[in-house]
Length: 341
Image (cartoon, rainbow, N blue to C red; front, side):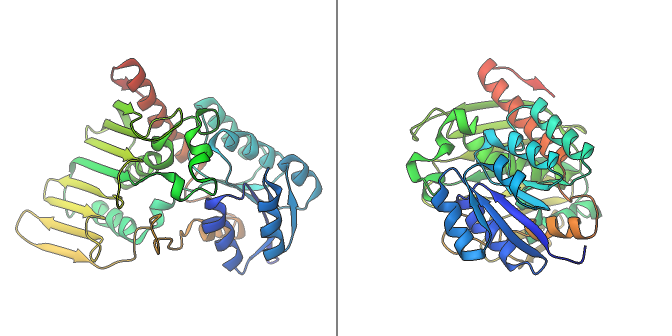
């Protein structure tokens, strides 16, 4: 594709502002042509900055504009409807996480993209962060032997400091978010671990609670899991972890331990059982803290997939697999029992 890819953004909140729109604006192969948000002033501000038109309604936008691709940056409950409408309009779609609010909806998104021969890519940006890329390489090399257990954490003080709506954000409303910290943060680490290990999670046990935030979704979740080959692991996700942020993952392996995101100077550390320690100075793991908004890599990967007509590096099916674990965790917490996926 030699001409510029015409991109529209559905939802003009913080993730659109800091990641999608900013990175599309920097990509030489992209022309931003439309912005959509129920708060029309947000869409208008970006249209004024980047050119293009502002809309309140994405259906109207898709009907009126010539668009090659869209980013879906809406509250979670609109991911499915917006993606399906865009795919029907023959637009490639980059959808924020979690993919949907049900497996049926996720399947419909995937099917609609396939039927219309368009790409559906998920915005699981943790995969592109340099420490994680290097970690996958080391795990795949066999240098640490088999992974026995792991723990992965994504916790901070809550989305109110990030969201454009602050404490009134949709993140805290179940009818728009469907799930709290687990869908905001935990789903990132679930996708990351599945990708790093190269195998799916098949059993889940969890506890969830609401301790600090106002709203009707959980602000903390703790999950125990088992993978296809029997690897045991835990996920901790929290909106009450303050001050600071924990975005770390540790793998305990036959031949040593791999620590990701536990040290600011060395974001990847491998400690071998023979006493050797290798510390890697790599690019940062992106955070919501001041100065932590490093380039995600997601937008460039999406545009390259369109330009070179290749499969998205993070597919809709990948998004569905992560969602399966989220839904199983919700079910486990509600029913107080292990859930087999």
